[in-house]
Length: 207
Image 1 (cartoon, one colour):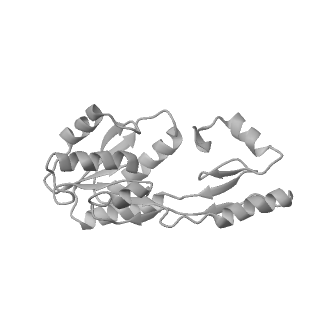
Image 2: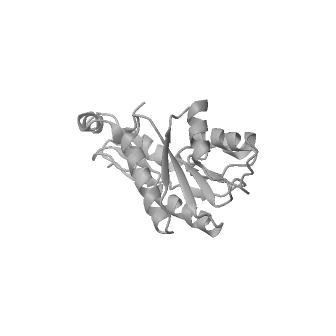
């Protein structure tokens, strides 16, 4: 499914013009659509400060190789590059599909130094967790020899061993956004609004 920000303008314009209120998870949208904005950039900046404090001097960034969510992917990669540059780091870029194959995992792992100076930052927890498992299967200590982090704060990261450092909404609470949507159903004259539910850095054992 395409994210709102990757839809053609004519489609988002039609959504905004619907006679029923629309609520979307996105950082920007046409007038007429209410938003839940997750504001990822601040958490990305915090992650790189955290990694620098841990002595990381090399970054390998794993972006998702997918035609979906292209705008979000490009924007997030830009934020990662900026946050790394603030600490004098130039990320090595890798691409993996959302459900990575063994060959994709091997390709990344063969390129990543495991001398304790490197962090593997993944654009999704769903790519970070297989890489975490692959590291352990190869006898690589995490976080001793390699630090691994993801994005999304999915439940699986809380129960992985070691637990996964991630970025995301720590305690999701969308009641105000849903309440606003219901208010718009009952009172069509209420204007759309944006509710900020920003990502946070969730530090766990993998870094």
